[in-house]
Image (cartoon, rainbow, N blue to C red):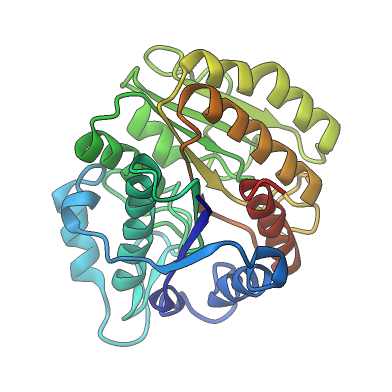
Amino acid sequence: MSTLIYTHQACFDHQPGPHHPESPERLEAVLAALKTPDFADAVWRDAPRGTFEQVLHIHTPDYVEDVRAALPAEGYRALDAGDTILSPGSLEAVLRCVGAACAGVDDVVTQQAKNVFCATRPCGHHAEADKAMGFCVFNQAAIAALHARQQHGLQRVAVVDFDVHHGNGTQNSFYDDPDLFYGSCHQGQFYPGTGARHETGVAHNIVNVPFPRGTGSAAFRAAMTDVMLPALREFAPELLIISAGFDAHQLDPLGGLQFTDDDYHWITRELMAVADETAQGRVVSVLEGGYSLEGLASGTAAHVRALMGR
């Protein structure tokens, strides 16, 4: 079985406007990095269109209707205070994000793929059940976790998030369910202001590792080795979903951490090792943030190279 990569042309049609950090050029950079001979063994598929039934695993009916109603016929419309902008193609794009993540779950559970990377945009981990936040409309990683339960009967599902920003939406959706694990390493005292160590969930199923600005490889790897990976092993997920943000990269203009391509390769391999132990190797990775095109491209390439066992 090979690594499977989902993407879709519709993901370019989400247009948040000139100078917005979450631009279509991000996906162009990712695809250019992955369409090279190093990744020739990967299998590519068009992301299917997610369903509103899948979206409702996490989001409220009122919020889904708000998103549909806010979709502009032309131009732009803000869903929140101004960070999360819709354009005419945005709904199709976010449904392709949901479809990719859920199809990825289907593929790894039915052994159609070794693991899956969803090269889609926009990101999703800030999206709350009832509101958009931080460029995110629907929370595809959290939706995929609940899809694994509803469609395949898996009970214990983990999401591990190494985006520079804390995934408040995923945490809040998982907080009161002891069989859902959310682990995040992120820059502390940074947007969105959540993710303190004392936020541990109903059954210590939430693990937050906030880092001070300037944290680099050594402290990152030590915290993952000493805190995150043992907690994940103890939880023993049947499926691991990765919220793969690359804005902790040392080149990123928004973040303040100093992670390298080698760090992303290392943490991917470490997470895969836990999945091999507890989840039959089942890993689905969903693209989140990353706003240096160079850092995003090289970090993603390192991540997918690790998924492919290289």
